Image 1 (spheres, one colour):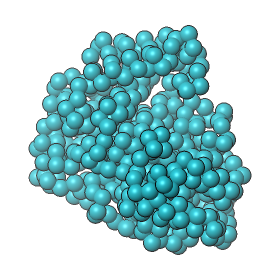
Image 2 (cartoon, helix red, strand yellow; image 1 turned 180 degrees about the vertical axis):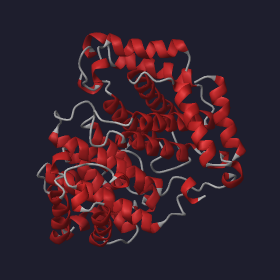
Image 3 (cartoon, rainbow over the protein chains, first blue to last red; image 1 turned 135 degrees about the horizontal axis):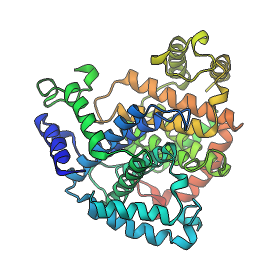
Length: 106
Length: 106
Length: 106
Length: 106
């Protein structure tokens, strides 16, 4: 996400005085609600889906994730790289390659 | 997310031959599964939460969102700005300021 | 669910003094968290799943639904029949038969 | 849920030829989608909620759970009692009483 997009999201929230609703818990609820709306695009089929609807719902998830990063004052790249360090250890290439088992079963 | 982080996520997937599992539907399921794990950090309290756990789960949501953008060949800034155009119309400042009503009730 | 099972769930909660955590909101979070764990059984495949795991997660969803009925003093049959009245009107047989379109598209 | 209600749900599905869509995976998706709609009743507040809306969404979760029990030919009381056996061991009264820690932390 570029800085202009981030600024637009922040301005959208502050102009509406919505920071008051953006507790981490409320944002966690919001992320899962939007994620379920994204899943609804694939409720009855994994092949037929409305791409415009998918774009809108995925965007909603990403906007609330951005709001949560802001509410907790987190750096997106920092937390992702921290988690990727963990993932790379949990799923070593030689064990994980070409299978989808959970790390607890590898 | 900067390009280096994006490249790291892509390399993680391709080294494990996991693109085969990254259908849009599977990724939509994965996003909601991780979003619910994020919510679990706030299951019984909106105030006491383990910030390290929150960071990890939020990172998981963001990584799967990145995977979905890639699987559908979407540009993150483009879809978010498209959705923000819609949100700004659905929630005009003068009506939405300081209340959390859904646009259908404004 | 028979009365003996309902009583067992209630006793489980009251013996642990857990009614204090069973606000409707906390139970709504809990239901979606368990529902996502149920979905995790099907994360990467719609055909290969661990039936024992499915049973456990579906049971968890049902137990929290029972807790929510209790927290709000609702009758399960009453709310389901009220909703089925709505569903039968929204999805008339002649329009809905053999297709999975949402009622807004019928 | 009494037998009459169960029969009504089954008739609703069979009259519309919807059994074809009721794979366990599709129903797992449907349960989490409806659970998130239930959570949406509490998105911005744990105290102000529309009880009629809550009833409708909780009913939707319960109906899809019933569909899943049917799709997998499971007995509701049997799986719940099996899970309650596990829960009672995981959360012994003397350790769990009055706190909401996860069993892994007890």
